[in-house]
Length: 434
Image 1 (cartoon, helix red, strand yellow):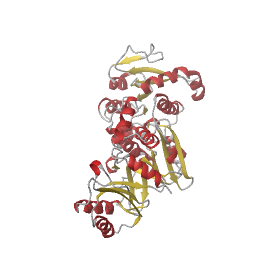
Image 2 (cartoon, one colour):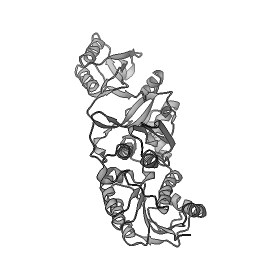
Image 3 (cartoon, helix red, strand yellow):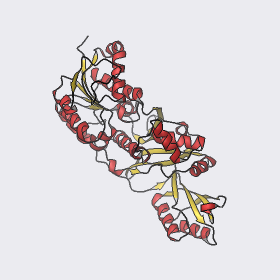
Image 4 (cartoon, one colour):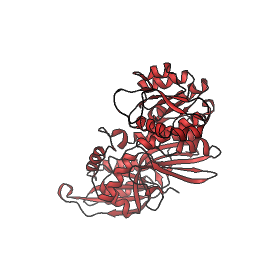
């Protein structure tokens, strides 16, 4: 059997500890499958005395991950620190400059610096592997970078944030209000103390930026993603969606159009009968539409120690077996610049919820503003008149036919200026998913 593959592991948190235990308990199986032992030769962590559940007595310890990447006798650098800047970035760059492959679960690092790091890796004749960076344990990176390499992808979309999916699922099934559901998610460890990164849509956007590059052979452009989170979703919206035959999900979508590539993360109403609508709780799912395979859907755990460590381990095994595909699916010189698509008609229409002052002429004025912006309405539903703080208002739900988001926003801005609305209008895209 060949000599051991020596890992330098930076980060011994939940994922790092799970990875260590997997390597220890599956040592014989892993060695048989890749033809050589895999061992952790060096580590970097804050607390050296903490028990991680596996033997670290033979590993060299470093206080600084950059020192580990530069000085340790290792064949692979495994970065599980997190963050787009600071120690994580510096350590990864140091490892690549040495010409050794990097395995990482760091979506933020790749979303912000993936192209530059891919270029550095190619220059040093090595690569970065990052299966764990998107959708946890779902093998979507390998699928897109390798299994679908002969396909032309038209669209990639899915549910990429478990926190949001957990909250929307509970709000729908148990009628829990947003704030109460968020507190529960924090208590259970599904949401951070500051949940903005998750509920604001930014976590999903980082993952989408990476998938976009793999899908379309383009450079990563995080700044071109339209991002809207779920903080404004109410139980009334969820109930209305159900009555209309939809479920609300935080959807991440990248698709090729005649004018460029469109990237967006936002709440969407999707048909309740669709496969994606059945994905509940902290589960993630990614769908890919391609010319040869049509549409495929991969679903599974989007986070968690063992699930994420499983994805990291699969990359390590590829390195051990000599499988090093280009970081972003193509050599960096072959990546085309990202071209942002022009605003276009949205095929699924829009759900609009208004709190309208109950007075003569209000509804006629709203209809006129829609018509002025060439917005055709599929349905108009007036709910029971409000009471208490909402006395004197009537909740109104509009569902539009195909139109552009710019037209809807312009019409709603005019309706607001006309003084007919008590609160800010609420708008949610309807995705047909066809």
